[in-house]
Image (cartoon, rainbow, N blue to C red; front, side, top):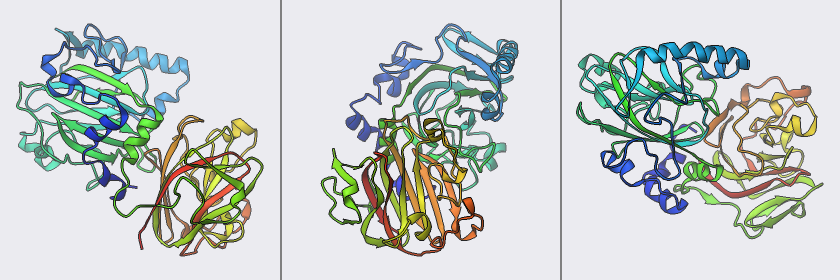
Length: 453
């Protein structure tokens, strides 16, 4: 969801999560007083992407869709990688423990690809220079000369730290505050990325708060689930040091994404029993505050309450090949995939490999079952909890999985169906919310709904 609800919650995220996770995020002088620490020595839990001595671990790329070069055959990618190194040696150097670029050439690109992470780095640049940090190979956390009047029309006057390549008016495009230091001083970034959502602090001041990083190369697709970090060069010398990264596990990424449910969300499952739920409840058990579907049992359980427009936030865990679904505007009887507005599919992304069965793309996880296909590849590993938000307004349904928008569909426009099986309920305007079990031990917890009508 690119609008308000889920993003209100993280105004004080740094301090909240430090306590909640038991992990040192505001790591001593690394995030507060960089000059006081030994340069290029990572804080506990972080890895140094730049070793302070040479360019080991880096190659060169430019503004190009990372999906394309990541999909190359190994030998072809190796040729592209190796061919870039001469350009890198020409324009990048190491001087006194600092990465230095002359303002030209390819962008320094990590050989390793990353999913969810926390990134720390320092930079210092010169007047009229323009740079940035590509996340998973996608532009970019912007670095400006915020005094260059010729670029004020582009947003330079607002300062660095925004997601400049987002669409005009989109959340995150302009930084929340101007936090650049004067030329000659080192600036410090802290960047967290979970799914497609990004949080940025520049010199200790938050400039982006959980905004979706749009895919510059194809705005109909989400950014890749994994990709490199790139240091952009663009027209003037820039120096970097203390480039540290810490990969986030599924649980930590989920906490960044969910935070605290904002006002308007209320639990519809109490974590103890099925109070407020009806249907074939013997299909499920409550274990460790989660609804656990029982093997070889099917059917739809659903809330007593009905909803028109709403956002639901929940967590789910899948076994290999696991299959279930979210019942959206369910009338209380019948197969929700057809008589409800839709079944929003809950399915192992590796279902075909796990079961040997072929599926229609409109059956993949997050899809409006049999009607509109969702983007794939954004689930956490099997056995980990996933976080999902679904928003239903009128005939539209949006799904965000682990911080990445994977479905944005208007079901009133659907005229073709998988297997030519009509969905007479797709235009329903209200109904119950529930789960459509399919014999597999899928688990759900922390289920909250915000009515929007």
